[in-house]
Length: 300
Image (cartoon, rainbow, N blue to C red):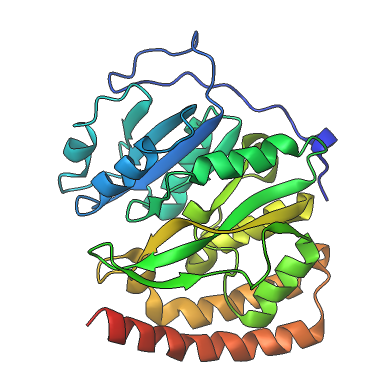
């Protein structure tokens, strides 16, 4: 298990604001919000505006486009806010490569990845930064929040919460166990989560060897280094639509989650129990049908 004292210090990287001019003489922001984009023309404006409307203002917004053939980049360039940087990949890197470039380009103390279809509530950054700033012992590996599931037209469909508990600390082993037993990602999508960039530098890159759990795999690795803090307020919105990546890989989700359970069960760092694996596999299969029913009802 890594400790905070074993982590290397984060590298400060020169970056560009639109024109890619050097920024080495500019102090790093407190938060890096990164939007990895590909074919995002339909919703990227809403995602950008949800960041620009934050009550907490000491952030950079990095948009990294993965060679979109649509108007994604043109839409992003309409915004003149100096906190925005727009970068374009020379080649299509895919989700894993683009998410990892977001990590490498971020200069902030804290990091949040915001998928191009999703939204942040105006107080999201403020609430999550406040929790991490108060954590002087660095006992918290990640902060996560409740979220709202929305459709293509921003209509709320349902709320997703970790549990009925109020905001507070959740021990890493409890959170991991509950995710396994429930056969699903209780922590949430990337927009729901914030963590220290220094910890990310130590943990390493996102791993898409099991595509559906690209995010959850990373959350579990972060949780090997500390506990979590749950905010019961709905501070993020996750969009489901016919074109979203999560829907596109829907048929593989149950298979991928069971593969993930097996991966974690074989890793001694996680100390899994047989009963958690047993129930997790059952729930992963059941969740497949619940998810398909949800998509058919709301996305028809």
